[in-house]
Image (cartoon, rainbow, N blue to C red; front, side):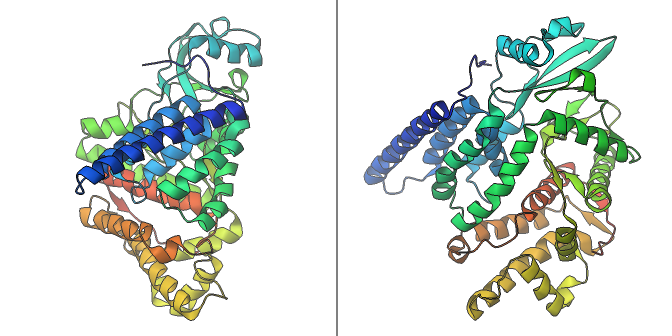
Length: 433
């Protein structure tokens, strides 16, 4: 795998990379339309593949928030063409790593010495590299450790990167400008938190300690003395990443137990801690040799405000859809509808979001739910495809929804998909918000 000796860190350097990428995309469109003139039946599949490759390669060099947004988009299977989903999903597992001299430079900055002077052993090559940082394996006093190192300049580039991603998001992926402007502020806040490894350390210690009683869950021990704003050291959790474990095949009983553990972990955070691990992609979980669920990354955590909690979880209440008056009140509180909406818009969005709530709350309607049900996920994808192509939604001058819901929706969507991959039948406790 190619290593990077330097990441563009200044606004000018990063803007130049975006501009160069835009030029490549323009060339891809010209090539596509040229073929279309010769053969009108030419599909957009090749165009999507070329654009996805060029955008991903560019974001891989930039790393940071730009690559993280690609990761987030790949998790929303209803938003992107398949070529983008497949290419961008690589950001969840691996991206080209930094060269070792830059790793040493980061250690010198925060500890005044190289990693070899701190640990008994330290791998020169990253064992994993993703959007915000890369992981090296180390040993100390007979213990095997995972040392996460953040890429240089990532924290300073979040705001400008998101501004430069905006034209791609609006034009290529048909994202509503009103919703983009509303929700991108939430994305910026979470990404800024992800660049602060001191905050991640504190949250990791707190959330893992409070969740330690849960069955079939494993958390690493964290080491504050070997951690800093840009370096995070924890125990190495033996096992395979969740995605690899699913791909290679899990015993049925193991998949069931892991699925229930994952569900219980998220429900406990949502309703007891009101602070939730909001990045449920397969690369953030390890399946241990004895088939327990290892939680290894608390970089993205959403703290749930009390007033938002009281409204949002009404949407998952088993009785809400039978109470039209309460349903409408919650829709106003969640800003699915507005008091000044024309009657036709109000009726349209009430009907639309009622369908959405019915789909998303369906697992909560009974005492257990079979997430292996392909019919349920097909209905989700079909409805999501309908949403992404609704002109009324894309052209609305108002953001339909509140920004606090962004990462909670993302968490549930990711959780549902992981449970589907695990073919888990999960015991569900009713939610009464």
